Amino acid sequence: MPVPCRGGCGNNAVLKRPKTGDALCKECFFWAFETEIHYTITKAELFNKGDSVAIGASGGKDSTVLAYVLKTLNQRFNYGLNLMLLSIDEGITGYRDDSLETVKQNRDDYEMPLKILSYKDLYGWTMDEIVAQIGRKNNCTFCGVFRRQALDRGAAMLGVKCIATGHNADDIAETVLMNVLRGDIARLKRCTAVATGSEGTIPRVKPLKYTYEKEIVMYAHYKKLVYFSTECVFAPNAYRGHARALLKDLEKIRPACIMDIIYSGETMSVKEQVSLPTQRICSRCKFVSSQEVCKACVLLEGLNKGLPKLGIGKSSKAKRMLEEYNAKQAEKETVLKDVIQDLNDTSISDDTGHKNRKKDSNKENASNGESCNKNNCCGGSCRSKTNVDVAASNKKLDMLLEQYGLDDNTSDKKSIKENGVTDTNVSDENGVTDTNISDHSDDETPFNGQEEDDTCSSACGGISVGF
Amino acid sequence: MAEPIHLTLLFAGGAELLFDRVKRRDVVLPDLKDYLPDCGSEKWTVRQLVLWIREFLLKEREALFLQGDEVRPGILVLINDEDWELCGTMDYELQNKDSVMFISTLHGSTSVTSRIELYTP
Image 1: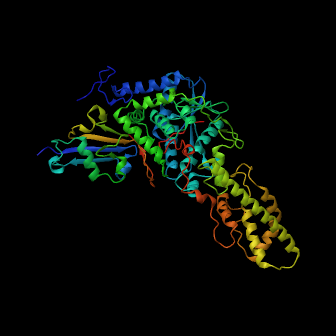
Image 2 (image 1 turned 120 degrees about the vertical axis):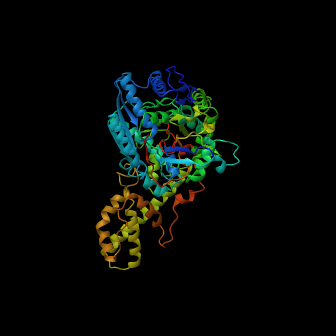
């Protein structure tokens, strides 16, 4: 029994709008869908004429629909925008490499320039490599934190006025719920904002903020837009999964709840006595941060020092880990100095004490590997002192190595990651591996939900709400 | 003996992953009296179809497709390319040559090691 379109056009309806309950035909649905987004854009004055706008494109349904609709509206209402696509390649084999093909198709279909930035280029690590280090438990934290910053960097490179992301109404309602569930008041306050960004940052805007996921999927279906049904190969965030399931259950009973949750988030006010973190600039990378050093830099430091759990969990824990690490480094440096002294002495004296020297050159070797590789490491801010000493003694060392037939496999040619592993074994001469500090926290870490985050904007259906 | 019901089942948006990656299946439903003699219904509705799909087609992660005996919220269903909410959802009475499409908007909470195909309507 066909249902007539509520628009009064005489056609048969094809869908029931979750937001209003109206039954609409295809054409009336397209019109309503696009007009609402246009209204969101104009009411919040998201763009100015002549702006360059980067669309955060993952190849998934939301960003594909966003790119298509923005292109349509740009032409229809003469926004005068210069639209381009910005994609982040996290380096997840079997997932992102495939979805990027879809983005390339978007580029061709919608005739927009495309910029792809990779984690590998930006941070020296792919997500595949990070997961090999950290395991599958907290990888969303890395991915989410890095992506957020990567988008900023990409936008800066493109010289755009703002970044438009495909976050939809369901995503935002879900984030409101998540922030309530973990008492994250700072994020709760800003997660519903249609445009976020403070001074010195490139604003993020969410033109699909009031657009239901169901309508996005139906729109893509009826418009025959090709998208990538993304499901990250790494286990997504289980907690968010529950929030999402709850929301879908509620939506089934009462679809308006999505809009109502967003409304609640928007209008909720925070007591004055609640202290909120202030935004400042990361002392290392100069991007916006709520801490002295931003999350991305802490995570990266952890990876590069072989302490991949550094940025996971409470900051007090991180501090302790770093202290232990630094103590070890200091110890090794002392050892290193002794070794060099020893080498200098022995090279002019006779060859007494072979055994000792053999052991020592092992140490030397390992320490050698710790040198700061400025490209991949911390931008040079880590302890690179050993570099100098080691360089000075390299020749001598090589001679010794040759003399004793030692394999020079821990030299600084090795990548930093491997050093991290080598590192932890160094102080143990007996072959009993000195337990990696971070391993202690492996399971006991009830990781700090707040940091665990905004996660995956694409894969886990999560959302990364800007700074 | 009721007329056999021929259906086209379509799976998209990732739902096909739960069904051996097959996006389109043409199926013939058996006589409902034979398949579910106690279901209390004379005619095939989506409610029985879902049970039949679970038994014969669904390959993995049932929870991503079903919740109890119903289609999981978050999976959109289109009957003859129309929103099933316009035609009674689970109680829609299936007709011969109907097409039923399931488009997932959900993501697995378990890891998948395989790739996902493009959604091409």
